[in-house]
Amino acid sequence: MLFVVGMSDTIHIISRYVSELGYGAGKKDALRITIKESGFGSGLSALTTSIGFFTLMTSTIRPIHNFGLFTGIAVLLAFVMSFTLLPAMLVLLNKPALREPRKHGHDWDGVLSRLFSNVLRQRRSIYVVSGLVLVASIGLATRVRINSSLLDDLSKKDPVRRDFAFFDTHFAGVRPFELELKPVGNRTIYDPAVLREIEQVESYLGTTYGLQFQASPATLVKSVRKALHGGELAEYRLPTDSAELKPLVAKLRLFRKKPEFRALALPDGSAGRLTGRMADVGSIRADALNRNLRHYLRTQLDTTVLRTRLTGSSNLIDKNNENLTLNMIQGMAIDIAMVTIIVLLLFRSVRMTVVVLIPNLLPILVVAGVMGLAGVNMKVSTSIIFTIAFGIAVDDTIHFISKLRLTLGHEPNVFKAVRRTYLLAGKAVIVTSLILVGGFCTLLFSSFDGTFYVGLLIGLTLLFGVVAELTLLPLLILGVYKKRGSKLAAIPKVVPERV
Image (cartoon, rainbow, N blue to C red; front, top):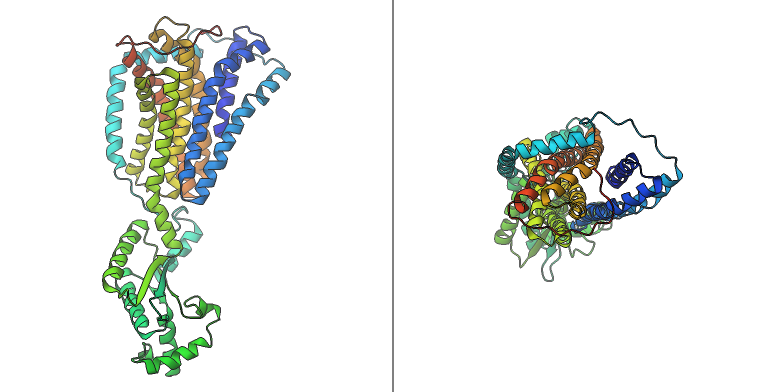
């Protein structure tokens, strides 16, 4: 992923460098022009891409936090290397052999010129299609649900997943359940009243919650009683009075330091644990079960005798799922805020900010709609898609508008500036996007569903993004500014522009 993302700046540099050589410039002059014209836009795009990764640091999930931190740093390092090591290598290497010019109309300028003309002619159709796609995407995106299971990143044909499915069907299941047991006051975990409350909770968990296997301090007491009565199944129950319970607890204390006993109760009896197993029902069903369990514990359990708390690995997974939406919204908000600040600094125009955001948010909504249509659930592995995709997709827009800002100083009106920018930046935008899409498509060969969907959905986002970049963005710029006769902020001419 980093290799593909870091390639963006290199493509823009090489593309502009070769173009300048084709215009007859020497190596050093071509590099000087390239760095002056591409450095600013590439720096901003590297910043927005790294921010897209840095926003993952808002996640409460440590691997995603670390992934965002180190990948964001690496993107900035890749930018530094692209504008230091790469120019040095180009100066030392021989001047590349340039291809013979193609017939007029068949080179990049000709293709992009025809494409720009077609976009202008079909502007009404583009607006209508974009609107319909937007409405459909929003409707389909509402179908996306936050749902994950323990092994949902493994394909259904994976042997490990099949083994777990076998245990789910024929045994107690693979999803763990943990409940902390804390006696109140001077009671211990083996107090008769505490044991009765634990047994009451066990009854609910077995009949309503769906646990197929349970173990607790009450289980230990009942097992000892059964063993002391010849293994009779009818004797597997709690003692009826304290006199009968006392010798059973004395027997248990002989083994209190053994690991299997310490796993269910502390040696001093100050706390205990109820553990169990059930089928992997998914986070949506588990969330409903946990809500009902908490309500039961609040209303039916005597909290003056025993207090409880859900804990364990499954509870942590469920809490992560609860935070997915918040983390994703935080990441997108930071991304959008940074892009807004960059555009405001470049053009000092709120309208230009809206124009830039629309073509980049539309592909995000389209991919969300694709997820809803295909039934792809939101989970840890897919929650990072939107912030990463937006941070990468906005690169082309940053290059386009930074080039437009340069071009405005050379052209008498917005229309000619947009057209020249389209021809200057179009090749690099297309080539970079195709390389990025191809790079992420290599993830489609992964046997992990999470990695597969990251490659597929980010690839689709970038593909839709370049289409919006080459069709919707120039139309929005012209529609907002040409009709109103507004002027965009430009910078003085610094280098001759060529088309």
